[in-house]
Length: 346
Image 1 (cartoon, rainbow, N blue to C red):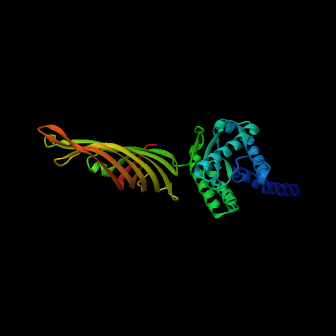
Image 2 (image 1 turned 30 degrees about the vertical axis):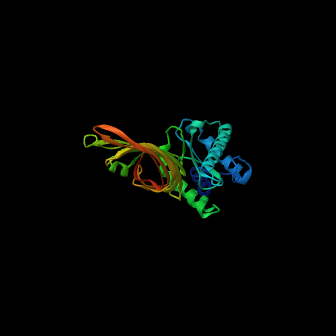
């Protein structure tokens, strides 16, 4: 009887010691590697990076077969917000993520296709490496993430990390078994544009906008129309092309300032005297993009600047166009206005 009691006591003691360790190993799938602000070098002994790296290498070794089979990808998120602009932050975040991956590839003997990488121009100066886990282990992982968030030095850092953790939890059940890809979590895209005000005046207008990064975009709009009536005695025809560079501001990147150049030709004969010639100019634009859904938005814009028009006057006599002289006009003021439908292509 005493042997049974001794055995039971020993068994219970082993359970109390071993079970928390096992539970911690299952949940302990997130490692944070710190970087010096504005630097991209991965210093292993700095800020506890060596401890995190050893812990991650041990976990990779215990699950190496599953990782190499592509069933358990490593999620790598590079962060940087200490540079002067978003483009530089994203570039540094990408280098940081690659340096951590290189360290794991060399030490753990895994491959590039075993990673899924995202880079962010927010959050702080660190790289997060995570292993996807089954949905039933999400609660344990969330508890660990909350503990790490509490250690962040700023409220903004905690919020950004919490947002990143929530996004990863939502994606984890679909990421396993998918091909490896590197994706920047930014608003890069190409959009088709149509100025509805131009279309309302029977002047077809189409354009494209390429968002180089969340803060910068390049847009080009073109218009063309040709109408005649009263036995061709009246005419309304023109073509224009207007390239524009934009800088988007604010947290939502909805307001913007831009610089536009405009060139084209026209032929108007609304009265007895017609005008045909060239126009050229440019100016400053401003506007606001109202997002309707994931694919559509309305762009309200106004341009102020300078236009020069060189044209000749003419009259039509017995079906023959007779020249009446040349004229040049300069205009300072509104040069462009639009309510533009924006359709995100990809």
